[in-house]
Structures are given as structure tokens and as C-alpha cells.
Image 1 (tube, rainbow, N blue to C red):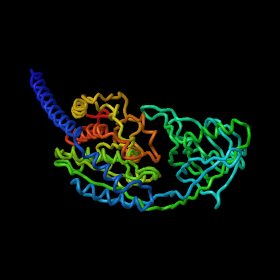
Image 2 (image 1 turned 180 degrees about the vertical axis):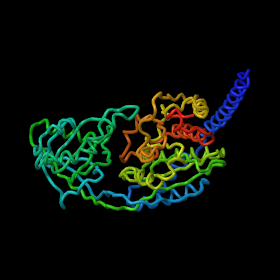
Image 3 (image 1 turned 60 degrees about the horizontal axis):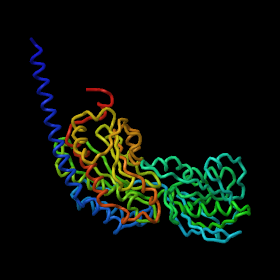
Image 4 (image 1 turned 120 degrees about the vertical axis):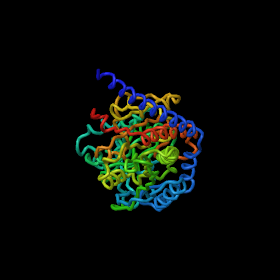
Length: 457
């Protein structure tokens, strides 16, 4: 006789839950449609690349970027806009040149790698040793490269998910140190790039205490052809750079405060700094624009929870993510979810949600809302949300991973070709639409990703 009331109560809960999901779906779908035609994301990235340009950590341009970020967030109606200062080591490029001096004199196109040591005044000249793969160099014994310039010419594979970059990343980041261990006086690596232009691609490295630079992909192949002829190939490098062990940097923050649960926070963002050859459009002005525009659109629906945008100030040379995590460790239990956009502006083609959350009404609403965009929803939880939220993840913050099409990204990334004209406005808008729908459904629901992951009710 007591079963009927229980069933009736269950039916009421189901009906209420269904109504909430329907309302979230309708509002998130409306946001999706609005975002697909809204110019906010494009306006942000156009403003940043035009008014500031390249933004290396420790440079006057990064100070201008800080001020730009504060002004832009205020202009768009964010509140509690502020900067969170921290210090981090910063490497700065100086004059650079490279050339083959014998037996076939030719100029080479290079970009010094972050943390590279400078050459002596006037440069250095030494014979090269070419390795077709990074593994070949690692197999060389200690002392085998004494007095030589190590050259690794391994090609990067173009992939949609960017795994080609991950598979070869050590060539750049660890290569200088490994070459130095074997006695090399300098290190050259084929750019971690999938393009075929004569523009080299820079990036961070461990330094190794020796000059280190990236070769354009055609120049890496040129050195292979020269070495194949059997004569000693002598290369001259002249690279001047400097290091600041404690450069001033800033994370720029703005919020849209929640209506009824303001202490519960969704943290999203992109990194404001960039390397110096281009204007930092795809890496990562696009991420800043996507998240700023998405948060603005989602916040316009006046959700329950607070939406916080962070423009992280030193991703390329490191430090901003950990600085942010250190500053916010005491509120980690209130961070509902974290997300980062840092693979340009290509279409989001698949995504991963926190463990066991896809069946929650809020996530059902989100997935229904983005259904017309035909995005693959992976069954596995996210593995890597981004370097600037890694510190929050280690502290226990739930996170998501929305994967963009990276097929063309590594043609451009860290090069002089990283410019505004490479961004397709419609693809940028699709990113804004997906993120706005997600941010809104989380911010206007009671979803608790931590409880879902542990099976708690």
C-alpha cells in the first residue's frame, strides 16, 4: 500500500528533471544559434592582433596586452576585472642568422628556441652531424658530438587531432639538452611543423646550455642533401638572446557573477601571451576570443553560477597556470569545472566530458543543443584539458576537453604565418557556439561533476 506514493513522488521528480532539461536545452540551443552569427569572437581577436600584435612574456607588448585585456573585459561588461601578477623566467630573442659556409655557401632560415643560449660574439662555426630521427641522436654515445652542431631532421606527421606534434615534441623540447650531453656545441632541429614554406617555427626548449634553433622545413632537407654528398658541411650560427630569471607577468581575470550561487565558479580561458614571429592569432588569441565571447553570451542568460574568464599570461614559456592554481587553491572545491581553448580556431570535432556526466540532465541538454553541429562525443573522460588548467586539475578541479581540427594548425603555429587572415570566421563562431552552450548549461544547473565521478548521489 505504500508503493503508490513512492511511485508518485518518483514521477514528480522525473517530471521536474525533464522540465529542467528541456528548459536548458531550449536556452542552450538559442545560444548556439546566436553564437553562430554573432561577431563577438571575431571582434576580440581582430582587436588583439591589430592593437597589440605579438606578445612575448617579459616584453613591452605583453604589458600592452595586459592593459588591452582589462579594457576589453570591462568594455564587454565583465565585473571584478583585475590582474593577478606573478614572476616567471622569460627568454628574449636577439639578432639571429645562420648560413652554410662550406662546401656550398647558402643562407639558412632559423628561429631560436626559447631558453637557447647565445653564441659567442661574432658567432660560431662548426661541422654538422645530421640525424634523420631523434632516436638516432639519442643512440649516439657521450662525446660523439664533441665540437659539432647536431641536426635532427625528422618530419612531423599531419593529423587531425594534433598527435603528430605530441609524438615529436621531444625533438625540440629535450633535443638541445640531449645534444649537449653528447658534446654538441649547438643544436638545430627541423621545425615542428607540417608546412612546406621557408618559415621556421619556434617554441620552448630546455636550453641545454647551447645555442638551439629551429630550421625551416626546406632548410632541414637542404642540409640532408648537402650531408649526403659526403663532404664536411660547416654551418655558422650567430644568435644573440637574453634571459630574465624573474620577469613580471599577469593573469587577466573577469567575471559574470552568478544570480543565486555566485560562489560556484566555472573557469574558462585561453593564453594571452604568444611567441614573437607572427601576431599570435591562432596561438592563442583565438582561444582568448572564443572563451571571452562564449562567456559573454552564456552570461547574458543570467545563470545561477559565476562564469570566470582568465587570460593566462605565460603559457608559452610557462608559469601562468601554476601561478593561477597557487592563487586559487583555497577555492578549488568551488570550481565546478575548468576548460581551456588552445588549438587555434579550427572546428571543434570531438569532445570529452567528465566521467559519468553525459547522462546528467544538464549534459543531456548541452549535447542536444550542439547536436546540429555533428560533434563526436567520446566515451572516455578527458585526458588533458590544457597546460594552463593543469594546476587546477592536479588540485582536483573537474575539466573538459573540446578538440579542434588541428589539420592545418601546425602549418602556422609558432611561425610568422600565425596571423589573423588564417582564421575562418565561421569556424571561430562554431567554437564560440559550443563553448557558450556548455558554459551556460553548467552555470544554470546544479550539476556536480565530482559526485558523478565518484558515484555519489
